[in-house]
Length: 176
Image (cartoon, rainbow, N blue to C red):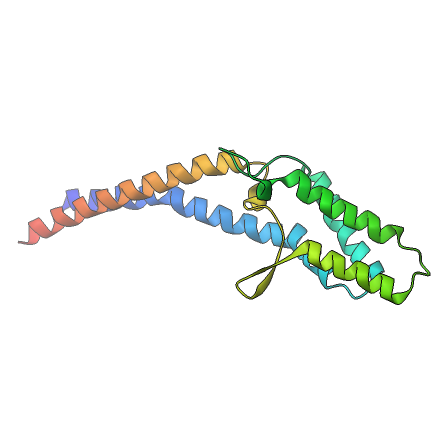
């Protein structure tokens, strides 16, 4: 019986890194939405140029303060959809274009600028509007560390399953 309990404790202990990894990714996703993604969405939803500029300035300031201005979110090979520099530049150019609009611009011109901004910032995914951003941006620039931690956590979680099955078999054998 002690061997079965030992296996249970070891198996549960080996699951802890996976729980930490999952919790860390969830927290990073929430922080991304709170500090950057939410402001980009609000800029896309803005009904006035002034309001869009206000939200984009917050987003760009955060991106610059947190080094989200260049690089790739991928760690093995790069693809265009993971180019953080392009994404940042696109957002920065959109902000500059909105700021450059004359105060006395016609309403149609302002509406076109807001529509262009919306198309720049949003994608459609499964019938839902989502912020256009590189995959893995919530943990950028620490993607490599998170990938290594994730692989280790998954390996340990699989090992914990093996240990738990062994412990279960030992416990069943004791009762038979």
